[in-house]
Length: 207
Image 1 (tube, rainbow, N blue to C red):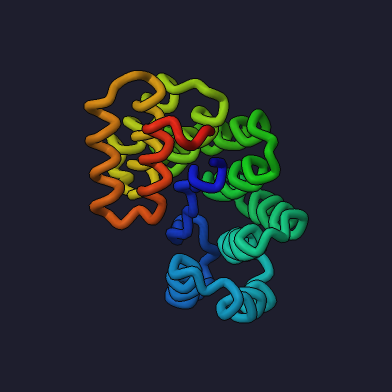
Image 2 (tube, one colour):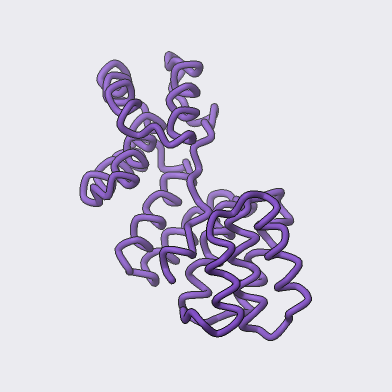
């Protein structure tokens, strides 16, 4: 079931305030867009070339961290995310990356600590709240999951996976009306594992 509870977080937007004055914003933006499309293998050489040209780029190192994470190269991802924080301690999304890494490693408590650090920097980061929904469900804290999901929505984070995760949280909290509402939103937005969600609701698939 953990594979169904996909992390909603992949914060790849470029934070202009985090860039050094000489950085190539359009080039970073293109790298980010290619990552968002899932083109990890194709964009990796360009991302590596970028930090070779701009070795003080926190954003460049952070994006390389995401590439490594998506390729399951956890140690390499950790190295890049930590380097990004060293270069720019105020970039909340580098902590988001470490949180996602810790969650994938199964260290949920450490993931929460990283997400909390991200929120200390930017308290309205919707991707953090979306990611916390996954952890809360795995910890069977369904009311907390719902609260965090609603915060993500409040901060304009609309995502089919978030809707799916909220439907699961509402299911186990006993609210079938809200469960069906978010299930339908997820399905209508193209969530790929809708049949598995229905099996959960019928008791045919366990968390």
